[in-house]
Length: 268
Image (cartoon, rainbow, N blue to C red; front, side, top):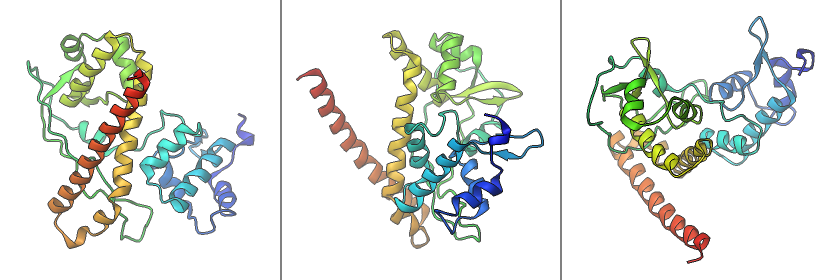
């Protein structure tokens, strides 16, 4: 699309205020940071929004303000609606943490960390209401990392398969000493993906599994909003345990629903 047909952020703000009078300009920038829209940039660095970008923002604001959908779930809804490309992603603190991990080391047995609740957000009490700070910090204490060559040799994957897994978000490599590195979690993901690929599964379809997992965590985030809003009344460990209990219940229900749906699909 010609840049002449694109809108600057101020024009988008004025356009959206017709439907959302209270929207602030900063919130449009914040939604971009959270991966809910991905505008183009001019040669001078100005944001340029297409009609699709405007519709994407309009739907994002509708979901979050009218349906109280979390930002995580809103992004997934936008992808499902075709308003947002899957490649659009929020600025991940977890990815930033990986940039500072220790140098890659060799290991014969990967250490897989125990599952913990994903990062959840609470409403901010600061002057900028659009910011959602993390209640639970992400632990990144595991120092074992793997080079690209080690990942290939330990999993049997090909370069093209690893590239596709990274593109689909199954693998989330960082950098260590200026080189691409993978964590124990990445190694586990790669090994599990390899089993499916060996059965002839198209690697491009695996991103649907990732989106399903992210959507489920988004549902847990919505379910535990009241619990997390009362964090000031309880310790973080207590809140974490309560969220983990809800997550466990969701996992059990999902497993039962999955078994039923699979049985119906197989005609059992």
